Length: 410
Image (tube, rainbow, N blue to C red; front, side, top):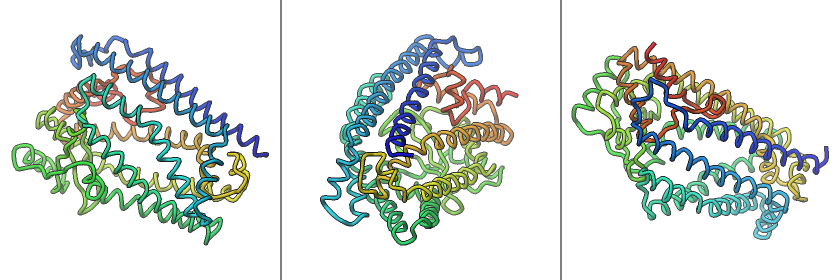
């Protein structure tokens, strides 16, 4: 195979992926104005449903614009030898491969972020603002960007530097060391993400004494689930949309409730949502997802180790001097179809797990408050209640609201 052939394969992968995504988006958009099923007619009144349809249509058109811009930018960068241009800039500062790689990725990542920031700004301050979701200030928006860049530089740069160093000392066997590093990092982040990373962006406070805490504690006792750490996060700092999540293991196990969730739902509904999350924990879904994620990364690193030394990868992107960082970019583009397949399989498992967690909540607490909570959360986020089945199959990690209600009422 020649470098030219590989170049055209990369172009084909990008274009085909884009076309498939746009076909799915268009199919989904055709269902925006469907009549609501009988079971969901109480979610929206007529005015709210029109607002939700308008929101979906606005997001769809904007998504079409942003994804088209992104794919044109990527193709233009490939065709005009942009990677070679950036590689030459990076090489002008150092001969050290690790430093060259860090400068190269720094330019690519920050350049890409600067180019897409106007879209992010418009999405937050025009679209989300228009539909009453946005609570982000300009100051928060800018600080989030700066903090994101710093985290990318420190954490992303540190991991990349170590992986290249492993490659330099271990050759093709570098993937084993890299896998160990990523596995430890993934476990560490699962344990301490809420303690170390979340406070950089949000304020977390322990849930105060009161009926809600009493009800949560009482439920946790009935299912033998030790839950001492219950936190409230200031999600309303950025959006009116609500959420709740579990994180950590063992002594670091904690539940985090968005303040918007507490405002939107009744106590009984919040306990039902937490019962669903406890279901994920009890059914070992979190451990399964973590194990599969580490396994998938290991497989990807092993495949990378088979090809990374081949100069064809760098040559395919128009770069004459082969290097790990250019090979990594080419590999990521070629690996995209496999990522799509693994993502699709994980979504199938995830939807199955959601049903299991719903069943757990229904059997250990009550089904009806979970149904009303799901309806309220869907209404408050103007969710699409009539998605196309193909779009659900390809993109949804959760079953649709209609499917979940049907399962809860069995």
